[in-house]
Length: 336
Image 1 (cartoon, rainbow, N blue to C red):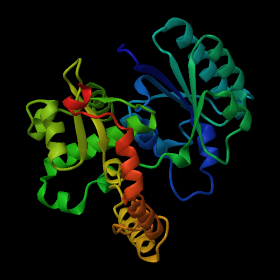
Image 2: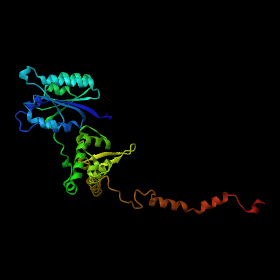
Image 3: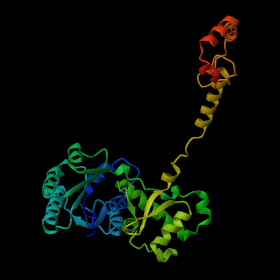
Image 4: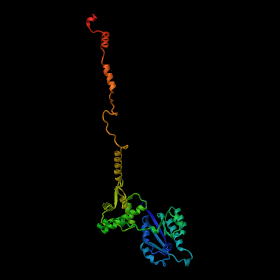
């Protein structure tokens, strides 16, 4: 078994499902159940329990799905619900004898299977329940690790992910390959797989359709199929640095959901800034200063100060003579 791949054993209490379908126009579709369960892992055992003389119309589709039909006598002959007892015995037998089976699927809504679910969980098994919403017991639903309602098993409808223009120019052979590819990618997303490796995608496609082969659809390798899907705009690829293999980053509506950065907000900001400038707000620039204003760093002298300096520069004749008499003489004859 590969790492991360589960091995499933499916046990179907068909009589309980028949009770849920009473009064409904649609019929039980085993194909929807199998398609959903193969997304969980590899199914290694499939058994259905009922008095098939009462449900003969369902035997053909169950045989086509490779399900083993276990015949159970009527309740009136035995006085007990033999289907529940036989199902519990077979499930415990597989739990002890087949250790590689790690996941058990109980297709029923009967609360009588709650002790079986608890015992299998004690053995370290993963329990998945599946039943009708109206005929499912709350005790069984809450005791399982996972529970799937049959009404929620809607076919993926991956063809809706393909645009009409794409369907018009792609051949029928490639269209089927791309539809199976998108269905497998959606299945991996439902299982909360964050990194979609190319090998993981191919394994899911093989479980959904065991006859799948990329060569039948015109591709030499599976990588060429992924590259062609990228050219058609169905998905986006990246190359892993370590393994050098393809990893699908986005597909379908995921790539379309990305929005471009809004540009209208930038224009609005510019317009608001222009309004502030025109209204003289805080963001408006100051006008250039003219020389001689109060902001000029070199102050101009006052008229009174100019008059005082001119008067000081003018010297009187008496003051000039006294200054000359006190000053030493530079005449060489006077020294003699």
